[in-house]
Length: 223
Image (tube, rainbow, N blue to C red):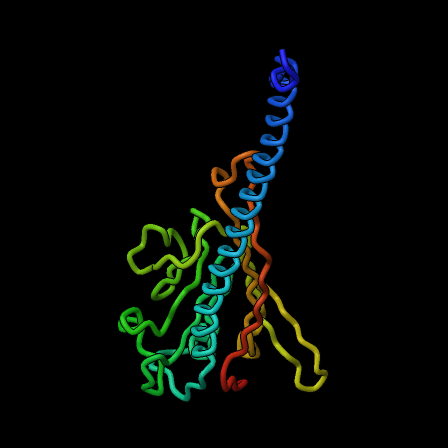
């Protein structure tokens, strides 16, 4: 047997097993890292979407709140409930605002107001979704054809009416204001989250950030 034939020596079974074990460990590490990165990316993507949807819902509310502050010199019905001052009703899970959206210089009578969207209610339904409703719908918006869905999986929906004292310069925000005529803005805190079954391993919900928006009425005049 010459020297070349002696050097043609293959791997032993032990060497092959050790090589396979090392390969499996490396592959397992790479797979685990990839899986964790994919899960992290998925979670971040969901959180970003929650934030975008929340801000979109707030933007809808901002538009209506600002319109509700347009000064109205005349009302076509008795203003017993401050229907011409912007904020009509505020509660723990909804608020109703009134505005001259069709620019007639007055708020339409109750029989017509639902058709002109001069009174709208933003309400959190029993399904934890946020709705915008024509007229003063205060219950079961999920089954009311006057209501339109704008955001689901609401964790927090807090409404406060604010008044700025022009003399003292301080601002007071209250969830149960005693004098609606002095209100110059509405402060809304909105937070959404994912559904329970959307997260796999720990079955926990992902929460979006709390977004607080204080929206001033346009051309608000105190009576």
